[in-house]
Length: 536
Ligand code: C2E
Ligand code: CA
Ligand code: CA
Image 1 (cartoon, rainbow, N blue to C red):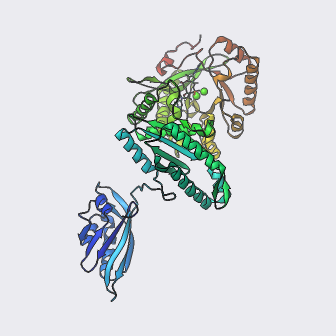
Image 2 (tube, rainbow, N blue to C red; image 1 turned 180 degrees about the vertical axis):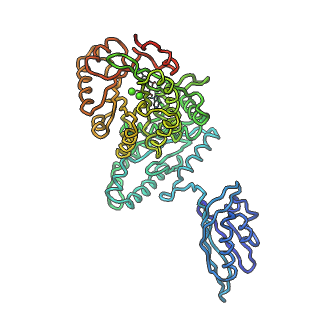
Image 3 (cartoon, rainbow, N blue to C red; image 1 turned 45 degrees about the vertical axis):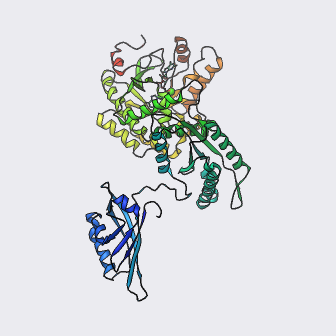
């Protein structure tokens, strides 16, 4: 028994009788741990293209030409797939110098080990395996996911090796503090997790708080006192019809909330009073499944955008909806923020873009100045090949890029600024318009404007809600419009609900309006039927 994915063999060369690790026998489906002529037997497991080299290597050893080998080949698993293996062996001689034993190891690179090599904890594969086990057995468990804030600073100041030492010692402490109350995992980087079937979330929170205090009181590595700040998301699973990926998406979301909005206090996923988290999780699971089942249940509504002065329709924003028989209509705010970092989301994003453009092609025939606005999630932009995908869809559909506007929110500042700039530059160079959505709801909006050229700035409806009553709100809008002009951007105001709001905003040279006063989001076909202007 050795490390996962590593097998040992020992061959008595006088009799050509070998013993192999049981784990190798199991994974490859070999006849037995004990084999006569194992070298020949193993040959038929090796990929035909690699056989000649293997054969020569073994021949050299048994004919006395070589005293060892170190080779790579592909070997066939019981399941039929081939794994790349590194095989190393040496000949051990008896006192007379005659070959006695041939001993070595085979490392299977295709095996996903379940142990993290740096900390010795179970890794993300182990985590998902265990979590699935709990879900299948229906054992109630508490799970938490926690990370260290700003760990890159430690790497930058003290170097990478020291950073690794910190993680090793930190992992050790986590493991000790959890004790036998649960299992500890290192998922990746500075992300760790604990699964417990004895602790309640409240007890987990208590442990987490004590651990934070401990880290604050002094965590020393090689005589250096370090201050580590944590953030943590937690989730209670009990009799749920969901999979481990959905659970992980929720944990990730709670952990981000903890980091971004709660200064590291543990956030339990959906612990709001009155909301049934059980149902919410199952709903999310159903939505996730829809993505893998041909986007069943998803559809788009278009909300008209009008020119602020003439009130003529000049475009629309595509808004995602999801509906099924069991759960009815689920608003996008409920699932997009949670799923946007999910590995499945980019697929959905691509679908949204393609469907939006498909529907807009028809409208464009009727209204040649129509621009379709499509929302992006920041995680989509991070994916390599994102811009290629956008241009490919436009190409496939023969849709002019100047009639597509992509909306990004201030959340995109979570991305590396250089990457974000590159992506936006490439899109704009290709003729696509870029809007900054929900302006003013984040905290670095103006900074972002300085760095990145936006064609349109969309002002969140919270800024105009009280515009009819409050002079200060009117001044604010006036200033935002002036600010936008400095950067050469047009302004679109969202959430126009009354003619009074319109009258005021028309004074401040706003470019376009969107809101229930003009139209709620409607099926794209209905937009075509709007023979008259939406508000005439
Ligand atoms: P958003 O991009 O700010 O979209 C505008 C939201 O405001 C829409 O809600 C719209 O229905 C609502 N709204 C429009 N006019 C008015 C009004 O006059 N009064 C009020 N009270 N509300 C108004 P919706 O459709 O529920 O979308 C919510 C959010 O979900 C969106 O906010 C956007 O952040 C996200 N979202 C929607 N569709 C997509 C999508 O396809 N991709 C991505 N990444 N996010 C989307
Ligand atoms: Ca939007
Ligand atoms: Ca918005």
